[in-house]
Amino acid sequence: MADKTINTKKCFKIVMIVYAVLFVIGIIMTVVFGPKLDINFSGGTKISYSYTGEIAENDFKDTVATALDKEFTVGKNTSLAGDVNSYVITLAGKNSISAETQENITLALEEKFADNEIELYDSTSISPTIAGTFFIKSLVAVLITAVLVIIYVGIRFRKIGGVSAAITAFCALILDLLVAFFICVIFRLPIDMNFMAVVLTILGYSLNDTIVIYDRVRENKRLHPELSVGENMDLSVSSTLVRNIVTTVTTVCAVLTIVVVSEVFGLTSLRSFAIPMAFGLVSGCFSSLFVSGPLWVIYKERKAK
Image (cartoon, rainbow, N blue to C red; front, side, top):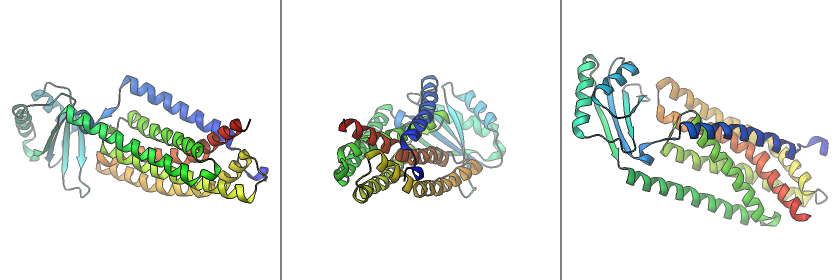
């Protein structure tokens, strides 16, 4: 049986090295550049201008700079139908602008791109105080979800040490969420409502994979009582490996399709959802297979000594 099973402890060491490398890069990027918070979380102003024809991003940005003396970023958007092209001007934090300044920007753009039928498409402003409150509420929602996950796993797998199973599953979830966060930092993607959707989705997928493994551990404990905790985990992971990987690959392929569509049409909102989602799903697969299980085995073996 041993020849046909995976040594999860060895895999655990390899996977943790990969996580460590990614986290070091992510921490460096976070310290140097910082996370790119959306105005929903940092406060600020977003102004969208629709246009026809072609407008180079640098030309658009230079024109805005003539009427705006604050730090800003510019992003290009295209509707899924391809009938509306727009540029989005973002001023984060306290860099909000007055109605007069916004009017000056509009006049400058209309004068520069008179042949492109440019016009104000949308304008949104959020105060830093409201954004901070919204950010805290989002974190509380994620925390409540995580606590419910721990309680559920603890109750469902109480026959194999529910509390320890829940804690190790939670550790794996933390790794998955850190991966999604650092991917956003590395690829300079905004931390926005899409990211919160990614977080909750990854929690669900990763937990599902972990539950499949713990279910198999519980079954193998009944069928093969002679196996040690480590042997049971190796057998359980080996028997669920193909299923978990195939499921993850199928889902990631669908998400990568969204990435391709977002790149072709310039849909930044889809990009900020699909890229961290893809990496988070892959992380969820490997953390369920080679992190939560081996951590649980290490805990049980040390407790038995």
